[in-house]
Amino acid sequence: MKLALHLKAFLLVMLLLAGLVSGSIGEEKAYMVEKNPEKNQQRYPYRVVTDSAVLYLGRDDIDMLGEEKFYAGLDLLLANMEKDFAEVKAVLKDYLKKEVPSIPIYTDFTGRAEEAELTDAFYYDPDMGIRLFKGWNDAGYSLLHEYVHYLTDACVTFGINRGFWAEGIAEYLSKLVCSNRMARSFNYAMSDEFAAGLIAHGAADDEGKVDIRKVYYGAAAAQMTPITVGEKYFAVCNSWMTMTELQQEHPTMMSVTYHQSACFVEYLVNRFGMDYVLTHMGGTAKEFKEAYGHEFEELFGEWKAENLRKCEEMQLAIY
Image (tube, rainbow, N blue to C red):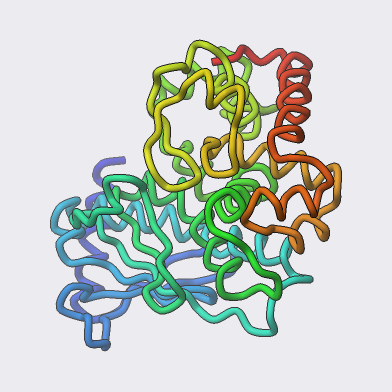
């Protein structure tokens, strides 16, 4: 195996020196790593052009990981990226504009931007695109979420507010609706030991691997129990908060966790329909009540009870 990998890396380097290398995306697609002809070529000497994106490959990132490891991770990402992007576009097809422009995606594994301290990847805007901060494992886990941000920010016919709605829709579609082959192929950026612990708590699929949907249901439930009081968590307002009993008893649209936002959006879609939810994503508590006929906290409480029942039916341990 090691000999084969070294041979692959050697051939890859030789082809890169010639300016071109091809690989596979799915069963029928092909990708090419080519010399970057654009102005940012000093920092990103190579790029990969796919149907939906242009990936810019950082010189420092290649040097840091080494060519073999860097291109092995790229290979794994690209084996699934277009399938995942196509799947989420199919879900949103009735709401997308006629054209979905290609999105730039940059490796920034060696960068230490302020956002990198908070997240694995970040979508800025259609021109600045998506930056991948923490290596291929985290990129594989986060990229579809960021691509949903791009679609719902720049490519859909409905409006969306930041915070609960933007993060909730991105989490719901990327973790609970779509297959997210990228995240699965990177084992959801989990160590084998951590994944085994989740499976032992009941979060396994039919193949005995991690079922990310069950993980989200269980985590969302756990975040409303005393075991998480005092723990820090990253809220949908894109800042770190400390879980308190008050937050658990009186959640707001900006203070819930990412797991909770995904599961609560699913609850709203099941109750009110996808079309209604996608066209009623106002950012204020008043707009929420006007659209859904109940205060946010009231419907959140109803979802909480239903989610607990779901966890019990699945025999999920609340962790």
